[in-house]
Picture 1 (spheres, rainbow, N blue to C red):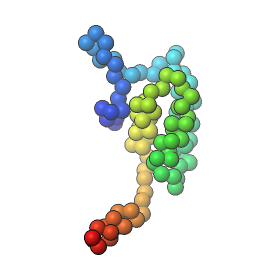
Picture 2: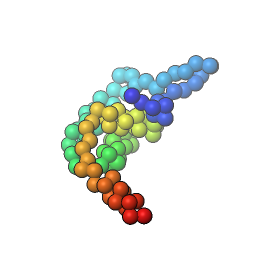
Picture 3: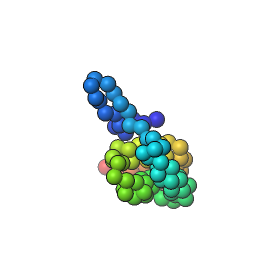
Amino acid sequence: MLTSEQSIVVFREGRAHPDRLSQKVHGQYLGHAERMLAVYRSGVGRTRRELHRAVEDILSEELDCPARRIAAFSKLLDDASEYHSAGGASDLRLRVFGLA
C-alpha cells in the first residue's frame, strides 16, 4: 500500500483527483512495468537503493512522470519483493554501541 507521501492527488474545485494512468495517454507504461519487474527479478544481491535507481532510470525519459510516481512504483515493487539479510549491519551496531 502506498503512503500519503507516495500518493499523488490534485485538488481542484474542492475535490480530490487521484493520479491515474490511462491506456490512451500512458500506454507506454506497460513496457516500463515489464522492465521494472525484470530489474527486480534479476536484482538478487543488489541493494534496494540500486533497484530504486534502476526504476528511476527506466522512468527518467517520461516527461509526465513526477518523482512521487517513481517512488510509488518502487514502493509497490518493494512490497511485492522478498529481502534477505545476513544481519551483519545490526550485529555490528550492537557490538559498537556495546563497547561505548
